[in-house]
Image 1 (tube, protein in one colour):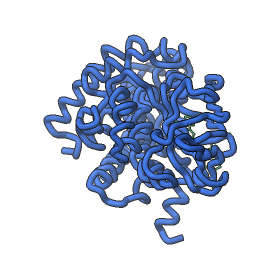
Image 2 (image 1 turned 30 degrees about the vertical axis):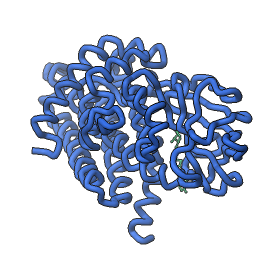
Image 3 (image 1 turned 180 degrees about the vertical axis):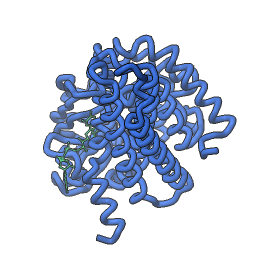
Length: 379
Ligand SMILES: Cc1cc2nc3c(=O)[nH]c(=O)nc-3n(C[C@H](O)[C@H](O)[C@H](O)COP(=O)(O)OP(=O)(O)OC[C@H]3O[C@@H](n4cnc5c(N)ncnc54)[C@H](O)[C@@H]3O)c2cc1C
């Protein structure tokens, strides 16, 4: 019995699986080609309570904790969804938590509730063209002018940036690169705020990604999340959830690919025998399964500790790297076992192979996770 295996959580799994089967699987290929998921999907997911999982009912959520969110992510992918779908539909998982933590009723009413109701879409903009790993080096600046900030700068690689109604934006409230950061909620349509082209990518095709530009954008001070210059801490505090979500996407993608490859190897015969009858293939599948399961167990263990309030920054970084490594190994092996079919767009495993590549880059790269781990070791 694992931590997520309670009767309520089994129900949540069933709800998620039914949602993916009915509302996602018939359309996912079209969304991949279109480059985004429809807004109506957010409303549908909200109506059955899926969008608000992991957010308290007091802010419009459905309740549940980090482990419930992890379960939903896991089940979406294991039911045939994808990490790209998670990125697109659950972007609020990175756009809203700072607002919820700030307990600012104005921001919660204007942005959190409508987003969890599926009628607004939010994004989180930290990364800039000059660099994403060095968060303290952010150069997009906000200068105070009466009741407003005047924002200048640009952001890039922003998930759901094309569709979003508002962007939780990291800005420097002192000189560029000073590390004195604040978070401002900037609404689409504010003069001077433009969304550039939709960026084309290797994977995550159903998740739109944008460049954002800010030229003398006037943002009300009321749209600042928490006190001035507390943005860096707020970003770091929420990174644990984002990194565990990415770790979950990684091991769940691996689990799904083990299932796909196992089914394929049972059905596919070469030289007169099913692939699965050959020891080399069986051992390869066994290794894939072992790595996916070990990653799942470790990510669950670390998530439990985060949910219990333990300061496990190093372990979160290790969990992300362990799960990404397992995923990288498994998607490559799964595609290889599919032979030529694995390389075709018709093969689900092909999508997972492409989608998986971002997991060791987004939310802090594998190298940055290693930096955190090394610091945790006292190095
Ligand atoms: C599809 C997609 C979606 C994304 N969504 C979002 C989003 O919604 N919001 C957002 O803010 N960002 C988003 N990102 C950006 C992502 O978080 C960054 O790409 C990531 O943090 C890395 O930053 P960078 O690309 O600037 O690489 P850089 O920081 O320039 O790093 C380049 C390389 O150098 C390595 N490196 C950097 N510093 C060190 C060091 N000290 N030691 C050793 N190696 C180092 C890195 O690991 C990497 O391999 C997204 C990116 C993609 C591709």
